[in-house]
Image 1 (tube, rainbow, N blue to C red):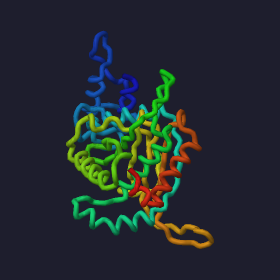
Image 2: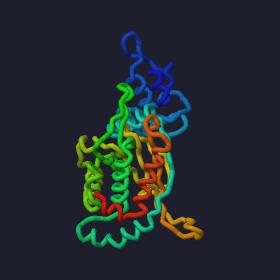
Image 3: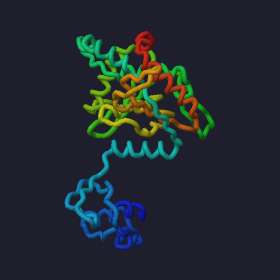
Image 4: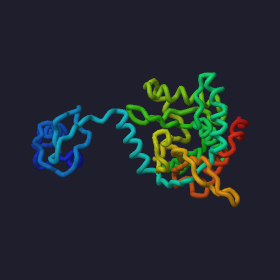
Length: 293
């Protein structure tokens, strides 16, 4: 109870317990919050009240307290698990997607005629899936209790989708076996279902690797949190034109920022670099992705 009181800015010495033997209970602390009678603690109120309460004060000014939603609590617990169990390292790099973007623009009308919005994401998913097949240690998980490494023979890509209820990560199954059009169709369905809250818990399970697209919102590099028990996650930044030295010439090229976080218990720096280089190679030559099955 002391920790809970400290987190929501209540001086526990001022709380009168109503439990057996005068023991302080959670409800006693929340009653202080709701009554507005708590003394200043110098810390903001956390989302701990049983319902949204307006007109509160933390001693410095007005605040609003609301109960954490179930999905937000699940996300918080998952992120805490990742942070405390997987020692994370992040590699940063850029992929030249100039030719990929030229192909996407020249093909988008053909895809649109089939009801498919062609973005760069299906190409990234396919590139990651193919690179995972070449780097099986990235497509694995570690069981420290049993002392085991579990290599997945399948490739399911988790797609992080930003919704008004929080971040959800539905799984795109067997991505390595799908063509670019098939991935584009499934990606469209996955994103729509996630934003419409039209999915089951099973749809969020079974991924072997996760991709998060920060570039859709804005931003370049970041250090994404691994979606445990997976061993790595790739974050895409916003593609932008940069001057690149090719031979002895400086040319404008379209570059996609990549941030790869990985579990250092299983994956070392050289292994991660080779994996990232494989992804970059596929994105630089999109024809390889179109021919890959």
